[in-house]
Image 1 (cartoon, helix red, strand yellow):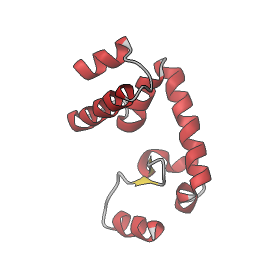
Image 2 (cartoon, helix red, strand yellow):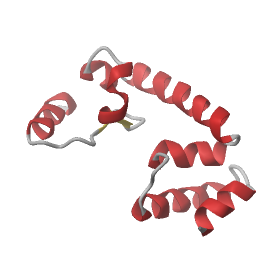
Image 3 (cartoon, helix red, strand yellow):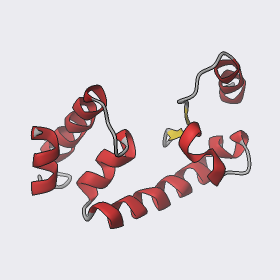
Image 4 (cartoon, one colour):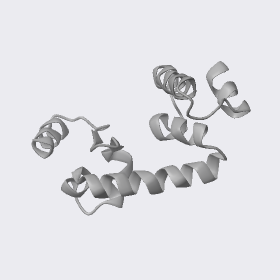
Amino acid sequence: AALRRFTQVHAEGAKLIDLGCMQINHYYHSSEFPSVGAMLQPSLNVDYAARFLKRLREREGNWTMAVARYHAGPNNDPAQKRYVCRVMTNMIATGFGNWTPQAKNFCAG
């Protein structure tokens, strides 16, 4: 069903399509997979997301900003930024992590 839906919306001209349980964006990450079907396979989807998050953490220096960049990319628009800051606020409120200076600056700016 997911592959059929992807094929449909892609044929209709959609470019930014998130796939699988980790919502990997086809436009930006399809070259890392042998096929769209592989992107939808849970084990491959999660494995790639974990490796991508690890690279983001290494680049950003902390998990909070890695998660922000995972969801919104380096050039996020205001709607994506609001979403990411809500995710971080909820994550921290439930005891998973703390505000870092970078995250506070990201959400305040």
